[in-house]
Amino acid sequence: MPTIEKSDIENQLKNIVDPNVETDLVSARSVKSIMVEAGHVTVNIELGYPAKSFIEGFKQQITDQLAAMEGVSSVDVNMTVNIVAHGVQNSLKPVNNIKNIIAIASGKGGVGKSTTSVNLALALAAEGATVGILDADIYGPSIPTMLGLSGYPESQDNKTMMPKVAYGIQTISIGYLIEPDQPMIWRGPMVTNALQQLLKDTNWSNIDYLIVDLPPGTGDIQLTLSQQIPVSGAVIVTTPQDIALIDAQRGLGMFEKVSVPVLGIVENMSMHICSECGHEEAIFGSGGGVAMAEKNNIELLGSLPLDIHIRQFADSGRPTVVADPDGRSTEIYKEIARKMSAKLALKNKDYSNKFPNIVVQNT
Image (cartoon, rainbow, N blue to C red):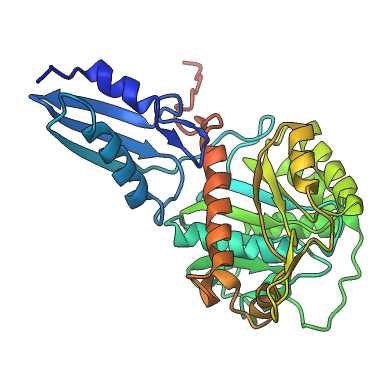
């Protein structure tokens, strides 16, 4: 039997592509160590994103491909997940107890952005991350309804708020602080101050990803988030129709101008499937998300169907990912969540907390 070398194993790992980051394990810097002893191979792999429902299958794939190599007698693949903080725009620093803030945006309303935000937050949690969601739509908060929550947040010090928790995710919304039928007749400065307070006056607990559900458009709240709040990345939600894509392009352009990386596009309502006969019809057009992704050289993270159950689950306070955990739509949400967080894992890490403070004193 020929002798197997460490370099042979590394070369083989270069041929194994992680579908979530769409690059090979070596290039993605996921391979932490390789040990070879008398034909026994041990490989330690670290993923930078939550992947609870993906790891076992991926481990088996790697094990099978290495075991098939000539000279390999046995294989032991260890795979772990390490979610770290990533760089943010300009000179901003991450918020305490929050590693990464991901903004979910759309250029226009009615594209299912809030439903997507909630289900992506739940999907990240299902994949093993600690997740929070901030409802930044001050004028039309919908997160409390979608998560079946109501009532004022608790305060232990009369200065800060405890996040309200549903299905394992921490949440905050202006909807918890006002009556359901109370209109928010506020000017821009009041709205932006409210957003800052919701973020910074909430006692978040060890958040890996804070999902920020933005209102539609590119107004005061979006600019505040882009310029004053440390955002690690953004996701654009659109539908395939031309008018939605035009507005989504404006949202994408805003993030580019303020140096917030766009992690990808989610195409919502891509296909209607008749609940009676199963007929598929692209009632909002087709191919729009793909074309937009190609035009901007970014990732199409996934496409979701126009499904009555997604709407019904959200309206009932039990979103799709928790109401139908084994359904196809939940599977898509998890795929999008993994790809979104995997794209972020490839970005520069944040080292602002690694350096000691330097104090100069006159003696």
